[in-house]
Amino acid sequence: MENGSEYKPSVMVTNDDGIDAPGLRSLVRVLVSSNLFNVLVCAPDSEKSAVSHSISWQHPLSVKKVDISGVTAFAVSGTPADSTSIGLSKVLFPSVPDLVVSGINKGSNCGYHIIYSGTVAGAREAFFNGVPSVSLSYDWVGGKSKVDDFVLAAEACMPIIRAILVEIKNNTYPQNCFLNIDVPTDVANRKGYRLTKQGKSIFKMGWRQVVSESQGGKMLSTMTMDSSASKEACVEESTLSTQQEHLLFKREVRGSQVDDADDDYYFLQQGYITVTPLGALSPPLMDDVEFFNGLLPGVHERVTSSA
Image: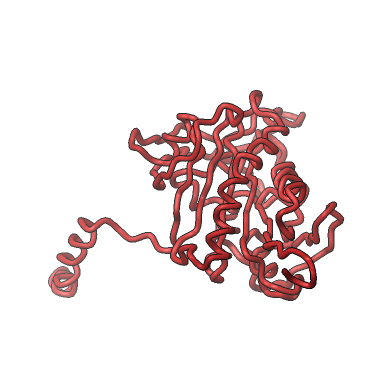
């Protein structure tokens, strides 16, 4: 009991798609409607997809209170990592939340894309600060997925959020990792939870020269193209040359590398909600350590002899 009422654990929500994104709003509605949590929101004021763990350093953050029913919410001019950091600092909220949930992202975050992801960075920043955290992503497929699927994804993740908070209350939750969770496209027919490891899947990127900033499709935070936003702007034909002051290039998907191993992306495509524990450190393979262990002792001699 606290102040004569039942104690509710506090959950702070952030994301990288922006505070107005349907994924975040759906997650917040589900959390609030459960009446189990004190819900806080501190998220970027606009889309900050694929910014990874970048932070604002040279310029101050602008923070604005936002009206979201049932929660105390702030929009931040910075990155997802900024949003988490200032949300945990106690300058906006009176206390540090029990759990940080970053998402729900529009698009999966598996394999190497975890490195690019601002959604994952929002959770990782909480981990850096000693606060338990989870990043949530929904495997959005253009032309197939619907906005209502974000609600289903949030509801599907409620059991694990509740279970985590029980472990936190009991002081039995592990301190050396945070969780990255991906929900399959057909969330209504999901197969359940599956503990996975981060794989090596990645979309291969290329660059295409364009004649306007609006030309070409919108890149999702998963490095894939959003077909619903792929209509090119109507621009006059022009010839780009090296004489121009600026040349414009946009990323485009040129293929993919997908492992057949039993990893996060594989099981997500099989219809599971994948749960991947992550740490801040990425230890290399022992074979590579041994290679450099053999390389370094002779480096000075090789440089001297070649000179």
